[in-house]
Amino acid sequence: MAEIRIRNTNERITGEENVRAFLNSQEVLYEHWDPSKLPEHLREKFVLSDEEKNEILSTFDAEIRDLASRRGYRTWDIVALSDATPNLEELLKKFENVHTHTEDEVRAITAGRGIFIIKGTEDVGYFDVELEAGDVISVPEHKPHFFTLMENRQIVAVRLFIETEGWIAHPYADPEFQKA
Image (cartoon, rainbow, N blue to C red):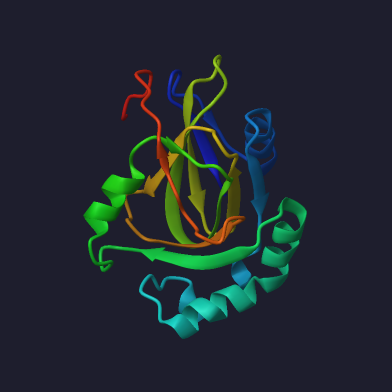
């Protein structure tokens, strides 16, 4: 279940309803899918064949299509990152810079853990959303953020897009942001 840490105060927000309410106040969509639907052999697997990626997409097809129809997403895929990922450090450097998009950034975590760092309202500042299997988040277009791995350095997620080109980041220089 997702947890939030507000960076300015180190306050933690836990519990699905509390997390959902806080993220809603920051214009971030949060939902939860049933991670136990994922076949056992894929729950801790972070290097995936195309067939295994298709199996994950098939497992969550109803949830993906429901979210896509409500939010206008037209395409989706699977991203799998771990220490076995070629050029992982280069990818993380690209991800670990505050940026925006011209569409929502959506992740449905199916295995592992990851973290979104998001710029909230002026009274909140930056906050971390720690995600695990079952957590679904949509960071709105133009909201400064970035995504990275947590200490386990393993994640599998469904990514949904409106634009068929996929993930396109626009750097966002912010003197208020501190990596901590």
